[in-house]
Image 1 (cartoon, rainbow over the protein chains, first blue to last red):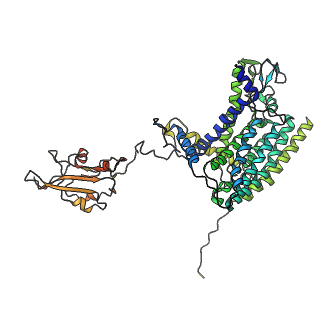
Image 2 (image 1 turned 90 degrees about the horizontal axis):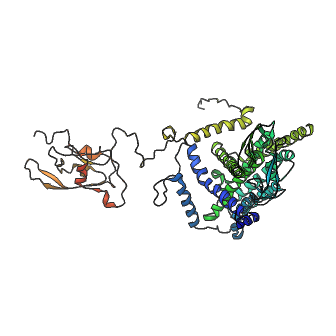
Image 3 (image 1 turned 45 degrees about the vertical axis):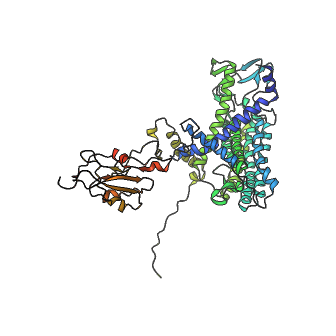
Length: 382
Length: 177
């Protein structure tokens, strides 16, 4: 590899470009079209957007020209700031929604550390150890407290919603801001507590280390993914995560039948687009967290650094192919989880607000506490 | 006080199974994912999509009395059947038919339309002109849709264009011949 690329990889520039701008932004903006419009159309037996055409190409191209037209429309629209709004806060609120959602990606590993030397695989404990130099090329920054960082950054986005609601000088916006702050604060409790059991099992906050531990094969065949050892926590985290990102059926802060569009009512042009995009990025981030914590992150079942291990038979693969497979697995899991969140959105009707609060405080919180206690008992016994 | 019939509706209280959400959510997801995957199949015949992609794909169903573009029927010798009696342009509620009559060379035929223009943009496709025509000269059974026009002038269909779509009529012209 050329030296310049290696230097940039070590500095993290390439990772930032590829992960944030290509994968996250690409997926989030595609979701606005394919997820929101095409997928809903398929579910509801419609066709979805297919009329816009690119110049000289007489084919709908899955409706992607619509998505480009939407972008142009957003940029060209007039930016309206309501009378009496706090102009400064109204301006920075979309950034406060958008920025945390992107910054949180720093801790997400898309692959294990790149091993310049030789990988040793211990089939007794199913662990890989690297003999030689390790490069953190598939993660923007390496934290040993990556999960805490992710949570801390994700919680900041509540400020964006609350400030947007308050600064717009509109009652609908204010109600939306109140709703979203109440909902996000409530669900963060069960979001964190549902993970306590998982953390007890892995014994680390380093996301990459967590994924490594999920490579262990129970009884030499069952991958020790988070969903296998903590199935209840998976459901709790999935539900709380959906509520945290304000996706339907928990999209009360934007309940259009009640409060127009909640805290984004008074936003227009690119500010509106940034708000929306920030929410989609948050959705993708939650999907990435679920993939890392419960679905084995970049782990492909039975795949180790030298190839697939089925019992004692080994199908040897070159290291570069293993890397590609693992990155593909991580991206695939994220896309699958995002798809599932969208399926939930188009399946379930919106909750009433008191039901959301009841679910959060009276069902999810006690269940996550019970899960914690049971996990602690089992860990103490064995 | 008037007597009202009161119908008591029994309320169905959700059981524990429904209250625990998860199995019911899974049931709902099964339906939506089923539709989603079904409509992704490469074989479009098996899709359950209701949308008709109409101008791109012609519809497979037309009612029996579907009215398309007008056409002017022809005499046995290929001349226009219309005798320029002005019945159609008189009855037309949209005033979209313009006829200028002229004297025919053949003494057996009194008049013929020298100009016969239908403005398809004004036409409301009511079919009254067909009803009014005494000699089966104008019909709306061509089955052709009015295509989109980029210029207003293109929507004026003149006599020759209308005759191109026409054909021979089964009816006898002018009673006894």
